[in-house]
Image 1 (cartoon, rainbow, N blue to C red):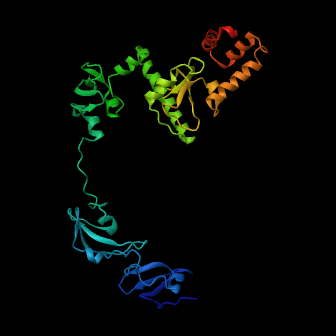
Image 2: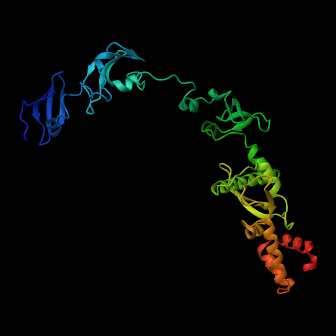
Length: 348
């Protein structure tokens, strides 16, 4: 259906034809709107320029005339402005500086616009450019363990370090401004010189990392995990409950923040649930060698002991002592093999 000039659709009157699909209309409120789809006019989807708002049940369009005279921050609404291409309400505002500007009414009511652009929030600290020009403004500033106490002739900062207690430590101005300096360098030197003193911390961190992984695995298996880290740690550092085999050695890779990853060796036994139906509780778990724990799996303890006796009786003389020791060496550390030989000397 061809649309003719002067055709009326609701409150809109066609004033010009833009192209095959779009026209320009004049609304009875006096506003002109271009780029209107002819199909929307024919189907009755569009009856005005937008000042009527949405139908009942939907969110009503803002009427700028209701807000004329109101003041928001530095702006006062003095008139109604034409809507934008998205048919959003806009208001003509006058700033305290005297400048007038057309601003979105929704952004103005939300507090996102406070002025015409002349207003700036007060700064609590001098700008970076000012800091670069005058390093003396940083005197008294605290950053990490450093407190600026003075400035040298070549723009270096004199700082007192709370970590080592030394005063008048020189720190580069550029490094301090970019927040790359938290101490005078004493912590890095301490880690390099006496890094062996922090080994115990690394070992404990490795145990905590293994405990975290252990707890996640128990949760995935839908098992009750009622052990605290202290309880778990006191169990895994013990020898096997069934054979007295020492804990096996584990290599854990640590990475803390921006420091380099490093490996720490710890010794830990596996935990066996006496009753496989129950979860990991203090009364239901014992330290166990990993190989033995895999063999036992969900078998009850009494039945597992009987099976081990049956296997030992049947294959008592089929393998030599050297073969047994060689097989143990392939699965267990050397110190564990010697422990087994000492526990059962009559079998070897």
